[in-house]
Image 1: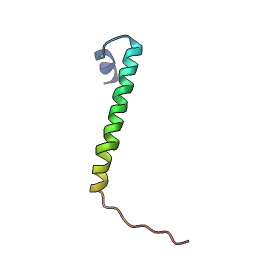
Image 2: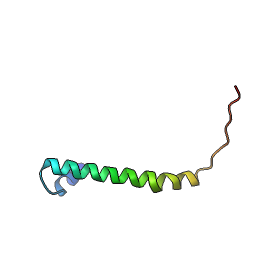
Image 3: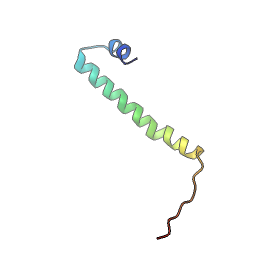
Length: 52
């Protein structure tokens, strides 16, 4: 899969690395912005207190 992605991207190796880093940043942003809050709303949370 990674080899196919590497060969699909245009340009020399340094351009491909920049494109892959930008895509990784976009995926992480989407996860933090939309996916993780959605999953958090689905999973029931438990009130946990620790007595010291």
